[in-house]
Length: 263
Image 1 (cartoon, rainbow, N blue to C red):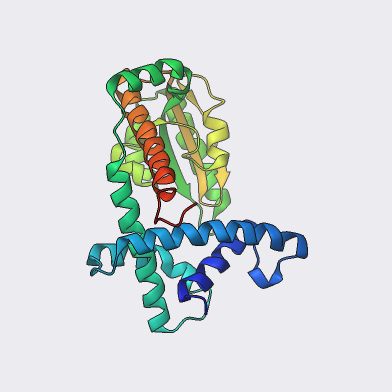
Image 2 (cartoon, rainbow, N blue to C red):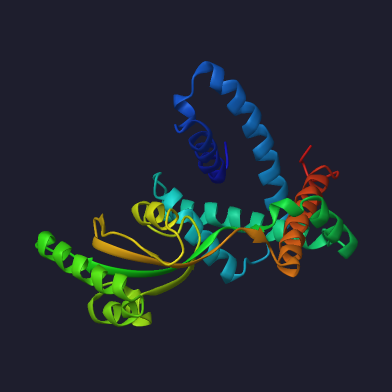
């Protein structure tokens, strides 16, 4: 009879790969599912078995419970079944951490050589020093549009007005800083605001921009073009990348050891 964790793991494998339950797979999908499941089952058995039956630290149980709760809620499990599944995954995490600790750390020459070979990947993206003013519209959108046009005219006259006007009128938390949002990269603002901000010239003030929140004004004070990342920061990222690679390779080697059932 399959272990409780197997039912859960089989379901997650089919859901992540084919977005359906194992029972709903087509004949052609069943063969691929069987191959993947046999490999995953061996790995899970090896990890959980090597962790042993010692008491599981509370921090591991809490961490695994938090991460698995949304997935466990998608199936019907009793409290005892949920506990068994959580313990299985916690034991796997414990053993994964043990194996990872055994992996050799990358040496500094290796880190520097990898950085020089991939230096083009370590670029600071284009950034814009942005100021923001928001008027939420509630039920009076035309009146708010009229007001933000008046505010824009004052800012056009002198950018120094932006700070005081944002503090007085803006409904954005940045009002506490006079509207200053700092250096903004792509991917941080609403799409409607980002497209305007990254088309502006230095010291440009936008026309009123409408979103579901209301009317916005942006001031692009300065533009910082893409530039190579500071070397020490890049080397820190390289160490992280190489450490993860070493840990993955060490785990693959560990799973091939006799008695690990990971062939």
